[in-house]
Amino acid sequence: WEGCLSVPGLRGWVPRWKQLRYSGFDAFGRPIDRSVAGFHARVVQHECDHLDGILYPMRIKDFSRFGFVDELFPNGGAAVAE
Image (cartoon, rainbow, N blue to C red; front, side, top):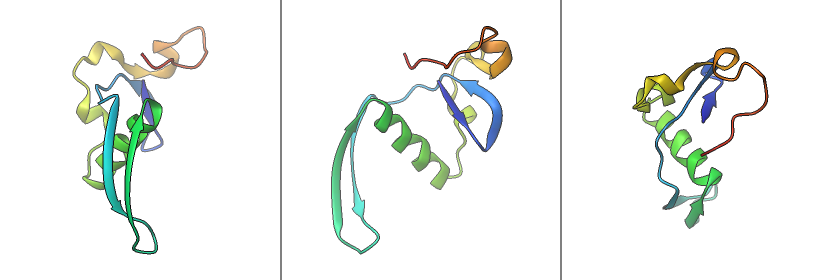
């Protein structure tokens, strides 16, 4: 499940790669090359989408798994990644 401060109060299930490799440069211009998995991979994809002007609801395939937090999880608790 994903949420974002750009879309407050909502959550949705977004299909994402479970692991990925990315490369680029750090703040000092040094090259980086990293492999990430799990939650870190999801965060990298989410933040790269922001750089491309994409918000997570634009990636949702099944809108029955998108909505207000209080309606999706009426008993409270954190949404668990699947």
